[in-house]
Image (tube, rainbow, N blue to C red; front, side):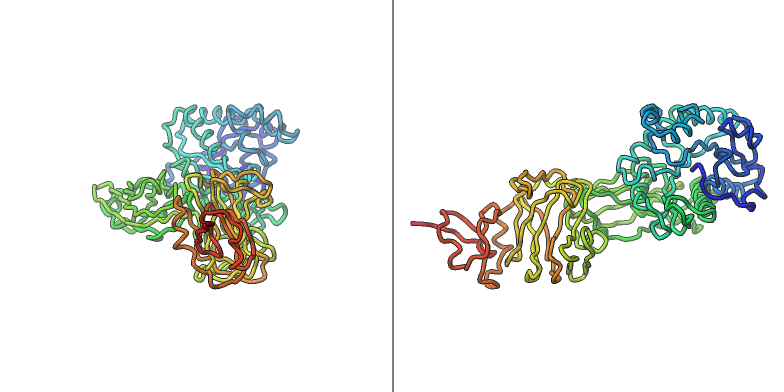
Length: 525
């Protein structure tokens, strides 16, 4: 947010005096003639004398161009390029400072070594003659892919409102996306985390950077044109949530729309509900966080701040209701299916290791050479189940194995269940061991899926969880397909491999076994 893009001559001309910036940096007086704590027409640079164009520039310009002449817009920019989010935490900034390099320390020292305190100091000056209406954020490269980032942002947001005596959750937080991959962005993956921010802060909005061009130099920053466009999007979002409607048509809800009435989601994940109210005058409003929800299966599905949370495998019918200002109530019904092993192009990744392909219609997977395809989680808990079953829908001509990882790296140790000549495997989640001999911890599974040598495609019939082992009798029935068979114990451990069927049970103790996919009872008189 400090501003890296080149400031063109065009950006310095025609700035409306109703758009103003408060000076924060003491050095600005020497270079720009601006004194700390005073307001000036927002001619760039806005952050400090030696910074570039920032999204805040065209955020403010978009607002003043759309609002009545009686309204002024002011921004206070406290930002430091390359800083982690902890630099703005009132409780953790000291530790951050102590561990920072000289360059970061010099930036923090511009704000007295405590950027958070400077935000509060300047905002309180602004409150003497104005009203704080929102907070803009563009940060994340230095916290790229850190899943706790939204919680850290939430803490800072809550602290700011409390320290400025602003009602909790009453003003919006607008957070912009990072540079996208197709524009040369390096931290584009962080956008998936930024998208979850409204789950933690209901009155927050992720600002899309799709199509905003990069500078073509470093993979982090937007070009001048890209920065202008991103800033305008901040402004349009602020206008959208600030606009009020006074006519009867503008206050009357005509109907509700949702992008889909059927959602298949990975268990243990969240999804923003794409729920919109359409008013009689034609305008629309995102109501995901203002609707009420009736859930048929609350053990599997929960809704928090307009986000679907999938708690365990299961299906649920959800009725969303919204009451307009004039008392009219509208509803829409949709279905959510939570599954740990969805066979959809959106949720099944054939490229976890090596480039593969997956056909959602036929459930056909072809991995790359010695490749792996499957599902990735944030640490899904399978400890409530006894068994995992995986079934192929075709003959195994690719040395297929099913693997489970309780660490978040593909290069970590995993369980490995080989299909061999069978179409099915069983994993006993209570006793499974990884390749390094340590027990699998099913309470936090990060990766699950299929490894193969890549020589041939194969069909995945299904993967599912159960607490009932007796169901295996109906699951496995392909004994006629191969003369050589594998032998499994009743708890799913393979004890013999690639034996002729007629010799497979010789010498076994009395008990129940799975031989070539068929349940066999061995009794020795």
